[in-house]
Length: 391
Ligand SMILES: Cc1ncc(COP(=O)(O)O)c(C=O)c1O
Image 1 (cartoon, rainbow, N blue to C red):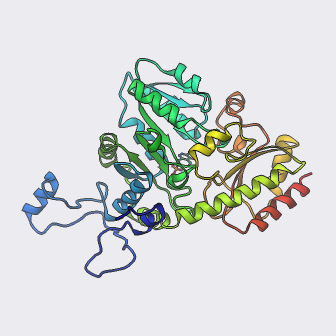
Image 2 (image 1 turned 90 degrees about the vertical axis):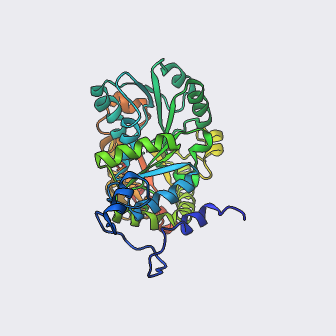
Image 3 (image 1 turned 45 degrees about the vertical axis):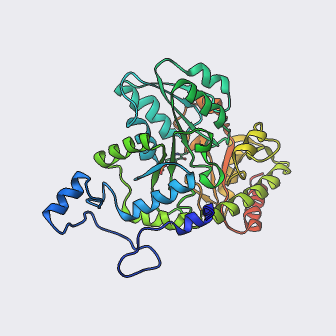
C-alpha cells in the first residue's frame, strides 16, 4: 500500500481507541496510571512490559501528538515539551557538557540566544555566533570542540534563510549535532531532516496550535539524540501537559489547510506592500526580490505566513501605523488564525542592543506581519487605512 500523504497522516494517526470506541481522541487528564498487580507494576517500571506509569514520563495524548509530528517531520523519534523554549533548552542541555562549544546563528529568537550566551556559559559551555545567511561565517565559527550547531530558518523576524543542505554537510563532515528550530516553516513547508538535521525543535505554540490557545513544544529527530532529550525531560519535568497535547494533536489535523491559506494571504499582502509608495522595503521568502529567493524556493514548499516591511518614516511612522490598525492584533505571538502586527525593535527583540538589532537586520521601523486566516480583502483594507491614517 502507498504510504499516506502528509494531510492524511496528520488526521489519521491516532491513540488506540478505548473500550468505548470513540471517534475523536479522549482527553487523558490523569497524573498517574494504575496496575492490576504488584508484579505488573514491577514489570512496567523495569521496562519489561509496555505501559504508562506517570504523565511526566508519558501519556496517550502527548504520545499521539509526538507520533503525528514525528511522521510529519519524517524522523525516527520524537518527544514533547511544555513549551517551545523547553524544547530549545533541552535540545542543548541534554546533549552538551562542560568544555563543549556551540555555533548558532545570531538571528535567533531572543530567549534562545539568552540560553546560549548567558545560561549555558555558566555551565562551562562556550558559544560563537554565525550569520544565518553566510556559509563562510558558519565555517569560520567552528572550533575543534564544536559539538552542536543551532539554526532557525526562516529567521525571526527578518526572514533570512540558512542553507540547510550546506549546514547538514558541514555538520556531517565535522561530526557535529545539527539542530534546526523549524517553528516558522512547520513540517508542512520544510522538513529539515531531509537536509541532514539530527534534531528539529518546535514551538508548537505557533502554527502547530495555530489558534493562539496553548503553549507546547516538541523535539523530533534521530533516536540516539531524542532518547537523551526524553530522559532529560522526564527527570527534570519539562513534559507537555495532557490537555495541551490533546489540543495540539487536534490542531495538527488542520495544519496543511491552514498553512496553505496563511501562505496565500501572506503572498497577497507581499504584493500589496511591494507596490505601495509608503513602503521602503518588503521581505517575503518566495518573492523574487528576496536575496535568497532561489534557496528559499528549494527549501520551502511555499513562502510561509510571515511578511516583514520597513515603512517610509522609520520608527515614528511605524508606531503611528500600528496604533491605527483596527483588525490586526498587537501582540507578540505569531502563527495564529488572527493577523498580528509586531514591532520587533521595541518588543520581541528589545533586549538586543541597537548594534545587535542592526546586525541581524532589525531596523527601527521594521514591522513583522503574521498573516492570519481572515478574508484577504479585510486584511488589506485594514493595512491600507492604517497607512493612510499614519501619513
Ligand atoms: C522561533 C521560535 N522558537 C522558540 C520560541 C519559543 O516558544 P514558546 O513561546 O512556545 O516557548 C519562539 C517564540 O516564542 C520562536 O519564535
